[in-house]
Image 1 (spheres, rainbow, N blue to C red):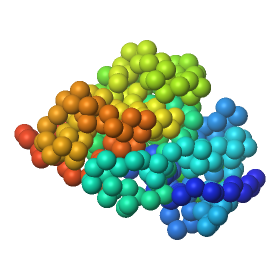
Image 2: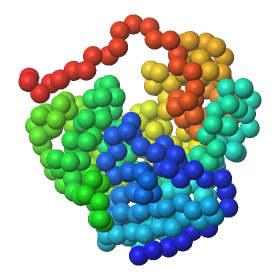
Image 3: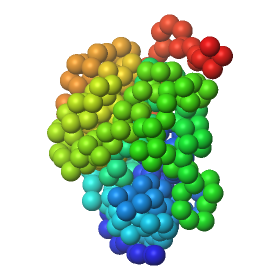
Amino acid sequence: MEQRFEVSVPLDLARTLRSMEMWGATTWLKTDASGCWFAQREASGPATVHIVQHPDHLQAQAWGPGAEELLARVPQLAGLDNVGVEDIRPRHPIVRDIIQRSRGLRVGRSGRVYSRLVSTGLAQKVTGANSKAALKQVAWRFGEVAPGPREDLQLLPHPRELARLPYYVFHPLNIEQHRAELIRRIADRASALQRAASMSGPDALEHLQKLRGIGPWTAGVVVGGSLGYPDAVPLADIHVPNIVAMNLAGEPRATDERMLELLEPYAGVRGLVVRLLKSQGLSAPRHGPRMDINDIRGL
C-alpha cells in the first residue's frame, strides 16, 4: 500500500522523526539512507510505514493490519499540519542561531500515547542509561517484530498483554516495582488514556495526570512528543529549568517558575523552544555527583 503526499512547507523529515525518539532507545523508529521507518499499533492493528523524502513530496509505503490508518497519519508524523522552527519568532541570539541550524524541523505527532507513556514511565527517577536499557528489553523480551521487511523494528507488547505481566518478570530487566507497576497501570488504562489524543493540549495534560504515577513531567513529554502540542513544557525536570535559564538569561540554576517566566515570550511554542535548547543549546554547569546507575537484578 503506497501513497504520495505533497510538501509545501520547510521539512527535514529525518530530524523531525528523530525528535520523537526516547533518548535513542525507541525500537519502533529508524532513520537511515533508505529513508524513515516508523511502526506503531493502530486501532486496526500493528503497522509499519517507510517514508522517503523528495524535494516536493513524501512517498510512503505501509505494511500490516493497520497499514491504511498509519499511512493516513504520515502528514501528522511529518508535522506538515503543525508548526516548525521557522514559525518561532526568535527573541534571543542563541535561539536565532539554533533555528538557523535546525531548518526543516517540525513538530510531528504519532497520535498514539501508549508507547510514549510506557517509555516515559520507565524513565522516571532513573538515569538515561537505565531507562534506555529497560525500554529496549521490554520491547524485545515481550513485544513483537513490526510488520514489513525490516526485522529490527520492534513494537512494545499489546497493552492487554503488558497489563497481565506480574511484577517479578520485570525485576531481571532491572526495573523496580515502582516503574513496573506504573507501566502495568498505563497498559491497563491504555484505552482511557488514548482519549487524550482527541483533546486540546491543556486538557490532554490534565487528563493524563489523572492516572496515579503520571505527573507534569511525564504528561508534558507525552503531550508534546506524541500529540504534537508545541507549547507543552515538561515540568519538575531536574535539568530543563537550568538549561533554559542558562541559555536565555545566563543563569546556571532556575526553578520551574523562573523557566516559565523566561519562556513567556515564546508562548504557543514553548515546548518546541525547550526541545531546541536541550538538543543544541548551552549546557548548564553540573553541581554534585552524577546519579548512580543502580542494578537491582542481584537483589
